[in-house]
Length: 267
Image (cartoon, rainbow, N blue to C red; front, top):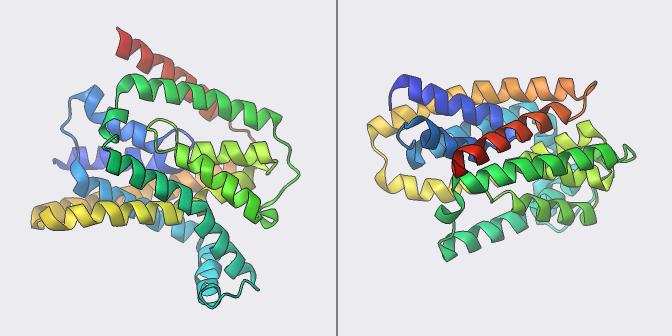
């Protein structure tokens, strides 16, 4: 890939991974709408690694606490905040891993990559995000996260395997319906992304390891760096904006994008 194409893919992934507008949908649409060659698995893995590094850095205190709690969790002890967070993240990750494996084994992943489907999911789940954001209360905070909520949000997250849904958007939607404040809903969504992106990277990385060469590794490193910077910037901007604005700007974007994609698909 050219440097420009690498930059374009990495920036699109970095910006859209954590905003509630669907990174997978944008990455599928990029070659479909521009005629650019599909970026391939190596670049897919690389940009996910970049965004993973960004969210780990941004939420480094939470990540450090969860990592420290893993040892206690392995010994069957959930007696610290870190161990509890690690346990809840593990529970919330199980549904999307199980659903992802099921879709892969059933050979349905390619069937879900149509522009029409992405248009519908972008539009409808955008409207659902607006509904949850307007109807949801602000009574719960991140420290109120419990096992029941982890299971519910994990099931919401599994829906994001359908391109255009948005992993962050659907988890935020579920959290707002449960009554979590906007910034805490976003924070839970970001923390849940860490094991999910890591699991996805491991699955894709196993395929890439067989075919990768020096040129592909170089392109992957460049893409990872670009996606890291753009994802970190997008995270910082969104979390700051949530102190004063709702998710409505993202909903407006999704509605217009969804309608444009449907017009394109059915033209």
